[in-house]
Amino acid sequence: MTCCFSHSHIPSHRPSKSPLFVVMDSTLQEPKIVKNIVHAGTKVVPFRDGTKVKFHYQTRKCDEARTLIDDSRAHGQKPMELVLGKKFKLEVWESIVQQMALHEVARFRCDRSLVLQYPFVSKTIRDAQKPREERKHCCGMTVQNEGIGYRDLDELFTHPQDLEFTIEILSIESPDEYEKESWQLSDDEKRALVGRLREQGNAAYRANDLTAARDAYSYATGIIEQLMLKEKPDEPEWIELAQMKVPLLLNYSQCKLLERDYYAAIEHCTEALKYDPHCVKALFRRGKAHAGAWNFDRARADFERAAELDSALQAAVGKELAKLQEQQRLRDVEDRLKYQKLF
Image 1 (cartoon, rainbow, N blue to C red):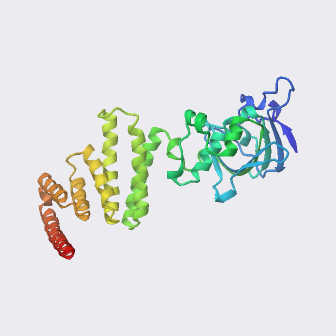
Image 2: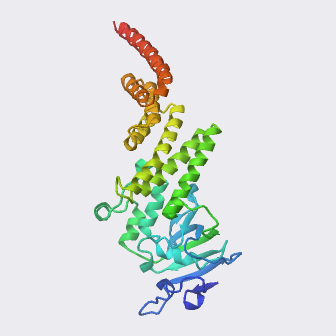
Image 3: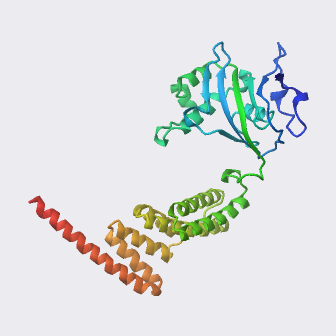
């Protein structure tokens, strides 16, 4: 079944103002998008802003060989996920999926004017499959001087042409049917999520699942950092967020201490102390991390400062200083033995 998009093909719950369905070639009066249904869908689902659509896709040139450019099923790639209404760079994808039913497979021939951004979208998706260190930033100057970085995409960028997309809709979820990612949330929703993540992290820590606890604390910390970027430093709202961030940093550092990742623990305790210079927990945990990393002088300074701020820690600090002294003695013995072997 083949159809051309026009006003009559747009259900009432779908946006009718998009030019993709009504713009015709000024001379030939041909549609900009032609749809060919390969397999009918099983269910028509209403679309609205925030709906998440998961789909596999193939991209081909409209030449005689129907040259394959991309295939989301190749190399174990994950399906594409698109959240409607979030200004995705390739607007035509957001438009065509809204003309499909659940589990439908369809081909869309799209005019070159609608797919000019495809080389950059394809590059982003391809790069995401690579290790981070192999990814290359692609700004306008880089494109002009070096190209996009993939020969077929460079050719497509230099010589735009019609493209054919074969789309298979795997799932359609309304905004209230899935857990939103942080970039989709309002500020109030982000704050609520931080609280839930902290509780999840605490529960995982009590269950001795350090990986899950650490991940929850890290995710929550990242959300708070997003919120802090919107506020002026040292303003009341910023200070409130900083106070929310400190216990998450401390919890994360405790996980790292138990994993013996001492330098990560030192880094996060140091950050907590930037927001709260008198944080005894941060000083004590950083002292333990310095001791684990054999930074004995720094460990001693942190322990002594913690005891100075909280006299109730005198006994605990005394034990840590005694252990520190023993570690120092053993280190000195090892160093003497190594020195003797040299001669």
